[in-house]
Length: 120
Image (cartoon, helix red, strand yellow):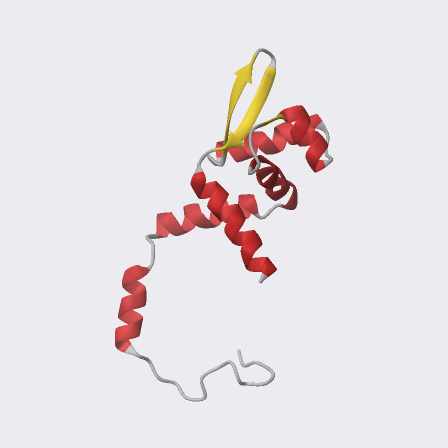
């Protein structure tokens, strides 16, 4: 498909075999692509991204997360179950209170990178 201005497409068809080979060799395997895109879809939900951003400041219980994100505790629990299923968050119980935190530094980096990118 050609753009309106045509400035962002090649004016001639040419393939650079070395560049194509290098890029193909660097592509992740199909299962890796599927897993990564699924992860990004989960994070792409605004409510879940806000929950992850809140947890980026430290551990919070479900009630606190619901208050921070302005959703019901039931909705927070539902979103947290999904985030936990995709290995983005983990939790611990203290009595009857569940405290959630980000699973690891990869999630912290993902959030920080996305926010930094949109701020530039």
